[in-house]
Image (cartoon, rainbow, N blue to C red; front, side):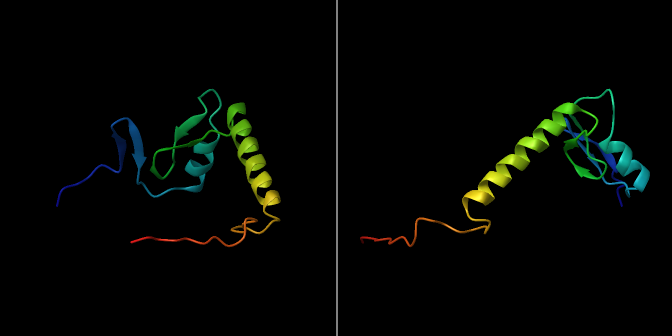
Length: 91
């Protein structure tokens, strides 16, 4: 069998398939002095660095958009106010 590396990067995108520990999980989401995005502690890609104020702005904007969407729909996901739609298909 070929031993495959458990961590590294492919085309500049990091990956890590080592078994996550609690310490590694917590330290990977809080890295002062680094940018807004940091490598995920497990899996493929990037995640938000909660030590960066920019990440909190992103979370605030996403939360506001979610709140606005749910309040516009009356709090029930998947509800349309347009009513039924008739579709006519001509052969």
